[in-house]
Image 1 (cartoon, rainbow, N blue to C red):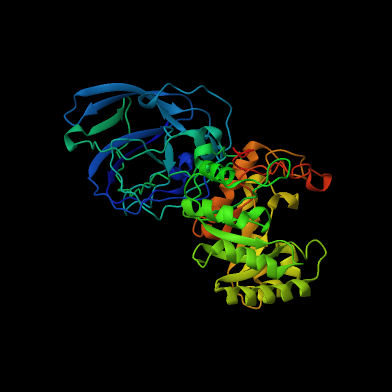
Image 2: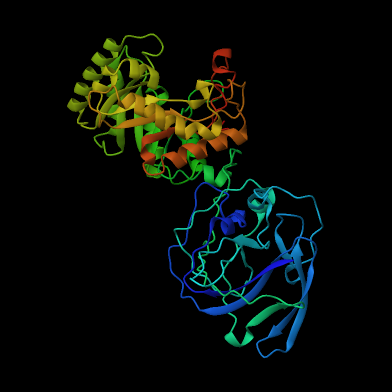
Length: 483
C-alpha cells in the first residue's frame, strides 16, 4: 500500500489546471465573466491524508491533535489510475475497469476530489506525489488569471457554480488523518492553491419568434408607421374614420407616412396626426401634376408647415421601370414650388434600397436618402434576422453615396402575417412580431430612421403571386377599426 499525507496551508493560492478540469461547470459559455474583486483570505491549516491504493480500501481513524479519536472513514483507489475517493465525501464508488486519465476533466462532478500537482518540495523534504484539495471549509481568493477549461459534459454544464464558503475552520478544529497501520513520517509541504472564481453563464441564444402583445405593438417608441386612408372597397375614408383609426394606434410613435394627395388625405391625416403629436411624411404619388399636388399640400398646411417632416416625390418609380433622371428633375421642381409656398423642410424621393444603390443620384438629389427595404422579399432572411439585414443593407447603400454622412431613413419595412412563404421567410403572426421586435431592437438608438409598414391591413389591395399572396396582410395592428 502506498500513501501520502499532506498538510495544506492555504493563503493566496494558485490552482493547477487539473483542479479547473474537475469543475467544468465554470466554463460552459464562450463569454466568460470573471470576478475582479479581491476577497480577504483567512489562513487555516488543514491536515488531510490521501491514499493511492493499489489493492483495496483502508480504514482510517480521524483523531484530534490531542489524540482523541474523531471518526473512522474508508479511503482508497478504484482501479489503477482512478480518482481518489473517501467515505467522508459520499458513497464508495463502484469498481470499474481502468479509464484513461483524460476522462477526469470531462466527467468529474463538482464534488469529486480533484488531484492537484504539488510544487517541488523544500530541500530535505520528500516530494509529494499528489495532493487532494478536498476541504469545502477553506476560504479561497477569486482571481481573474486562472485559465478555465471547456467541457462538453451535459452533467457538468448543468451544475451550479461552486462558491467559496464563508465559514472557515478554526485551528482548534484541525484534524489529522492517520492510518491504523504504521505509516512513514508525514510530509508537510506548503502548497499555494488559487481557486477559480465562479463564471456567470450567458443564456443560450434563441431564434424562437417573440410574440409582441397588442399593447407593446401599439407603443411606437419613436418609430414611424405608414397609413393609407382607403376603405376595403377602395373608397376614401372620412375625417371621422381617420380619427377612429388613429385612436387605435396608441402613443409613442413619432411620424406617419402617406403616399399621395388623393382623397384629401393630406388634410385628414394632418388633422389626426396633430391630435397625436405626430409629424407627417407626406407623399406625391403621381408625377404628372406636380403643381397641383404641391397646391393640395399647401392648402392642407394653411401656412403652418411645422408638422411636416419630409415631402417625397414618387414611390419606387425607378424600381418599377421609371427613369431616374425624370425623378431627379421632379425633385427639383417640387422643391422650388414648395419653397415658394413657404416650405423649407426636407424634399426627396422614395425608392427601393436596391434601386437607390444602383442609382445613387436619387439620394444625392434628395435632402435625405429615403428607401424601402423588406427583409421578407430577400428569401434568405428569417424573421428574427430582420434587424440585422436592414443594418447590413444600409451600409452597402451608404458606401455608394456621394455624401457618406447623408441621413438614411427606411421608409418601409415590416413582415406579413399571412401569405405564402418566400424561401425561409414565412408569413405568420409570430414571425411578424419577431421581425418587428428585431427591427426595433436594432434601431433602438435612432427609431426615427425607421417607418414600419404598415399599421393596418390594406384590404383595398389585390394579392398577387409576385407578392407571395401577402399584399393585404402587413398590418401589425390588424384590420383598421373604421373598415
